[in-house]
Amino acid sequence: MMERAEHNKSNLRSGFSLTELLVAMAITGLVMAAVFKIYTTQQDSYVLQEQVAEMQQSGRTAKYVMTREIRMAGYDPTGLAGAGFVSAGGTIIHFTMDITDEDGTITVPGDDITYSLSANKELMRNDGANNQAVVENVEAVGFAYAFDADDDGSIDTSAGGNIIWAIDSDVTDADSRLDTYLDTNDDGIISIDDDAVGAGLATLVPLDKIRAVRMWILARTGREDKAFADTITYVVADQRVNANDGSRHHLLTTTVKCRNMAL
Image (cartoon, rainbow, N blue to C red; front, side):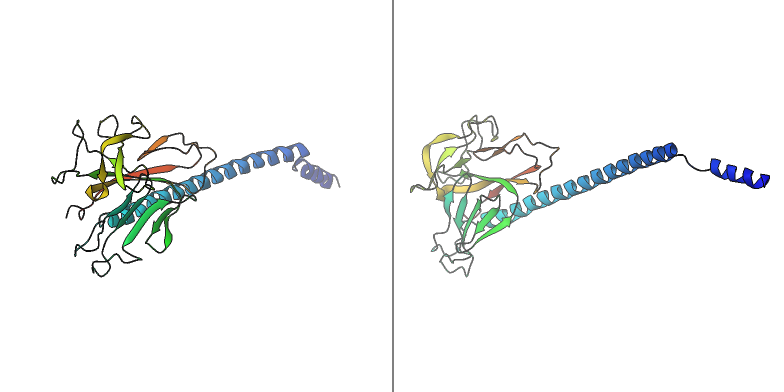
């Protein structure tokens, strides 16, 4: 009997007290909270990287599609279609090309192309009959135009020897001419240092003198990050864009030579 009592006492001493159980539960809770925090952080990082990659890919897709078509602006093998630029605004570009049948007529849909940005932040392509989104999550799109006003075979430059990038500041008017240049400080770069509106050209330039297009695409992530704030001012043609939100942004720029406009 004595040995059994001693054995029972030993078993009682080998158990856990309430305090020990509470401490163990607290430590386990802290470890689990740390593991969950690491998991959520890694998950957020993965989602962010995926969004950034998607944003960059969307920007490249838009750039490729637009470059390919803008390069063909004015294509008119018969000389009868009157192909060329219809509108040359800072936020909208409209041009025609006789690529359907090459028969001397502008065929709709197909030969009449307009690119612009919708209120829903979608880059839109209108082919003369249908308006379709090329890519989503585009914060801003912009255009500027280089020209050869005197038809001497060279793009016109400023007093400082820089290309004069201009726009038609009012595409709704009837004259359809470039009237505003953007590099107001003549340093060769359209930047935050230039006036946001630009300055008036001394002589208005007909759109058939356009020889190249400068293009900006400011893509954005589809979802905002509450821990991030983008306070950068982006220069997109004649626009100064302050998103001031939690989305990441990626600005792509390129210059497209309109090889058919000088023919």
